[in-house]
Image (cartoon, rainbow, N blue to C red; front, side, top):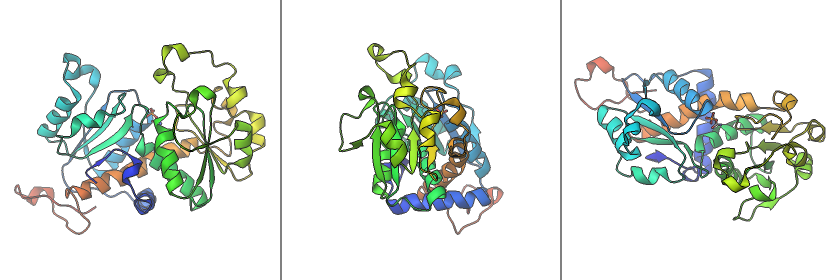
Length: 314
Ligand code: CP
């Protein structure tokens, strides 16, 4: 795998290996014994994804190039391709990219360093999916026959699109629960009401209402959303005893979920964020290995390299 763009690129075995690697990294962080640079190119806002990539990169010993689109040459009209090519030329070994276009990666075919998708429009958010899968795996130890409902703004959610397919491949029973305007146009998904979902699900995966992606004519008052489609205190009481609540966050408190439930005993929302660091370490090291930048067996010190190919153990 040269670039990590979609969960579709990973086999079920790859996903379990990444989960197990992340669990190992929770116990002990490796350090890449070589100077390597990562650049995080966020053209859409982010708190969790960007910060957890930075923590993951620092734990691995990568140096982070301080890219900020507001004070970069993007403001002078530089394209995504020219920005990425510039960073490659300067010496970046890894690019992490988020952009509002679903297909921004199509512009980057000529980039010769690893790229990780940190969010592509409404299409995919594969590292969010992996951290969700890690969180579910830590709870249940398997995905087989788990009942998972993805709830809310499915149509505009890259998180839903990455997760639904991956969870189904891993053997989960996936249902969707959404108001008509947020339902998927395609696919053979089972649509259920939120009241059915709370009784049926082992995992209730709530989604943020993606106001910024909605067409103007759709923008509306959300005051009745929680009562009609969200997780209220009353609905939480009807969930299975062992069931868990996920949400990729940021949470619109009082819209997708009652604010009192955000940190309730079933909620794994902040555990998801913590897991994001370790799964991102796992995907970074997988890519760097596949590019031959690091490997399991060889240890060479940075200061003894003299320009030879630098390969390191982690
Ligand atoms: N879940 C998620 O992608 O959050 P950020 O937009 O804050 O990165």
